[in-house]
Image 1 (cartoon, rainbow, N blue to C red):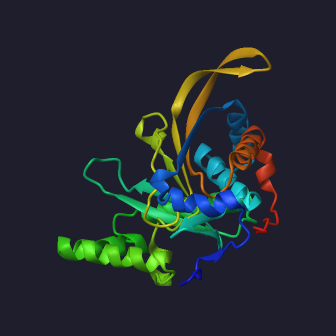
Image 2: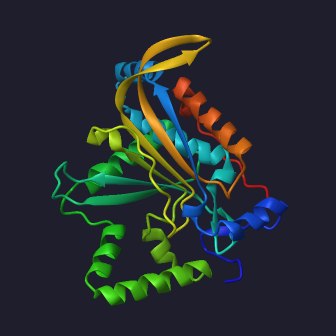
Length: 283
């Protein structure tokens, strides 16, 4: 309450603009900014092939997921969130991912949320991601998110509305139970979805007003694109990545530098093989 939360530290030294803007754009749906890029796959394919020769299987998803975790560790303002007009630095790094247990229309999605310190290398992140996905694809397995959703679905509609409104009130005042925050995929640093696995191109996915998500990335299917590089236009095999971000947590210059850093990792994934010391949010 009054700026105290179990999942974040209130930032007290914001500039005037970022102090006021959460009261003008009160919801995340008011403050979406969008960016899309076509990501050339030549370098990633070479890296994947090299690792395969070393006996290590790695995918585009693993590389992008690892780069996102690294980005949140090196650009800590991306890991902030705004709630009830206040800006917080998140404690820990979390990335949520929606998965289908089976590729059928009848099978429901489930959502996983993985915690990270930010120091992990790409191999540690890959193993954690792959093992969690494999476990949650088992039709008999229910994670904490599934269990919470099932409990809410069993009560009458009017009571669901009441419970959700109570949870929103508790969240706005820093009183949300830690168990609910841990189970909620919406209380996360970022969401990542691979819609390319569904055979479609990248989409702009909204950031949820409920919870504390600040970023949503969507990966599209493989395609041919024209890329301008050094004044030359080249036809490349690519995937699109669509970003949706909360503009209240940092400025455009910071976001631009973060995307440049992300692209650096896409051009040289080897940089993700080293463990690092995460940067702290200094404000």
